[in-house]
Length: 316
Image (cartoon, rainbow, N blue to C red; front, side, top):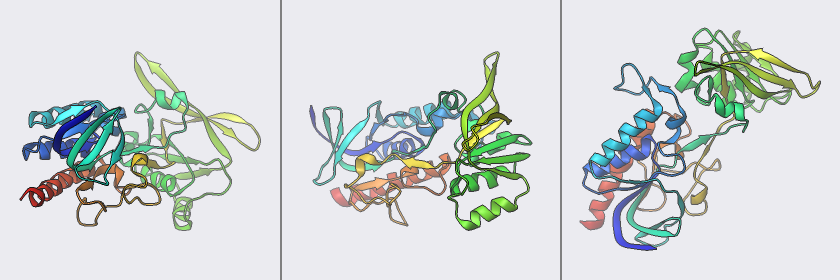
């Protein structure tokens, strides 16, 4: 089914970037259409407590924060749908955005599809996500003061996470499946010189070990396996961080807009413009450096203002 109406702006994604863009374009009376995607609310919906988002002195639960942001955007006229965008056509104007068999038209598009932490895919990892298992040291490191931490990975992401976590944890063990690390020489040397970091090679995480006491889950250890000897053992810890990187959710844009080799959307250094006039990108889909809720929200604001200015030049 095709719509005859041409929307001022379609926003693809509903994390802090997408919903902030919806709030600002809504207040500009642009009546944004938001497709919330596979994970409405973005990565914050799998986060328990958020303590570093401005305005919430005592912290706020991730899903609650996203619900507030959605309602605030809707208050100003944003139309939100729990639909997944399956493909786009930016070759002609108005742009075409497809959900299932439906075609939607827009004068401009904001891409805010975010990124997903690369996970190992084990059930115990999912069970304890947000309860001792995390994929973001800068988001959750504070909760592990004077505790024992494990970081999984062997690249720069793992070394960076481990170094950051030593500010809080009393010890950090980096677990890597090979005997050589993929990390750059400078990052590896920095980790080796840090007295709080222990490097454990030829080892993989077999299972997250934890307890559920009266409905309160917490991590108590990591079941590790030495891939050379086959030995398995429990490494006692309270936190397990996955440092194997993130993957931007940009597959449907391959060959359509300019992407970096790693899949992140290329945008102008001074604004959120992509290589296609009228298409903008914000949040973790184009940011591989900061990846914070507040920076995503900030770039969502920028994208909304860029759209407003673009539409003014389009319509006069």
